[in-house]
Image 1 (cartoon, helix red, strand yellow):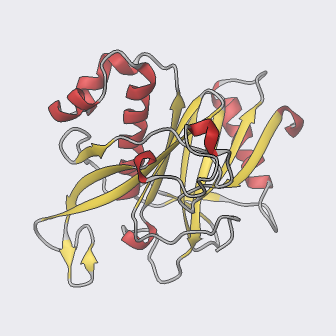
Image 2 (spheres, helix red, strand yellow):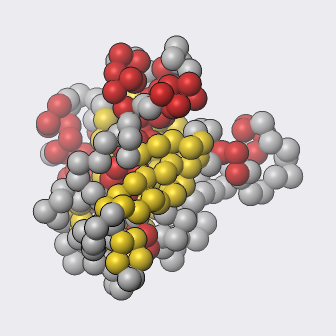
Length: 252
C-alpha cells in the first residue's frame, strides 16, 4: 500500500475538539478507499499504531484509550473527532462529559432534497430552504452528528432530534482570517451566530444526571453544533457544552 496518495491532516477546532482527516487517494474507490483511509489514520498515531473498535451500541473507540472518538466518512473524506481523555466516564455509555459526534457529507449531494421530509420536522422544513442543497446537507449532518452524540439507538430524526438554530459554516481551525467570514479584522473570537443548537430527547434520568437506561421517562438535552467546510465536504460537530475540550493548540 502506498500512503503517498492520501493526505492526512490533524487540526484543533474552534469548539476545542480535535479532528483528524484523511483525503486524497483518488485512484481508489468504495470499500478499498475506506479501508486504506482507515489504515492511514491508524498509522498516524502519536506513539504507535492505533486500533479502532466498536462498543455493542456501535459507538467507536480506540483500544487502550480513554478518549471519546466519533468517526465519519463520505466520498473522498474520512474523519475522526476526539475529545481529551475522560477516565471518569464509561465510554460505552452516554455521558454529557463525553457527548460528541461528527458527520460529513459532500456539499453538493442533491439527493438530500428528496428525503428532507423524512428527517426534518415541519418547523425545520420552514427553517431550512427547500431549494438550497448545501443548507439541507448541513441539516442532515447536524442530525447525524447529534444522533452519534446521544449514543441512544433508535432515536427518530424528526421527533427526538430537533434543530433549534442552524450553524453558519465557520473556520476549520481556531486561527483564521476573520475578514474571510465577513467579520472585522480585529475580531478574535467567533461570534455565537456561527454556532447551532440541537435539542435531543433521550430516555432517561438517574440521580447522577441525564443517563439513558437509568429509569423511566425521558430527558431533554441541549447540544451545540459547529460546521466547517473541508474542500467540497460539509463537516459538522455536535457536542455537549459540558464535554471535555482541548485548547486552541489541540492539547488538553
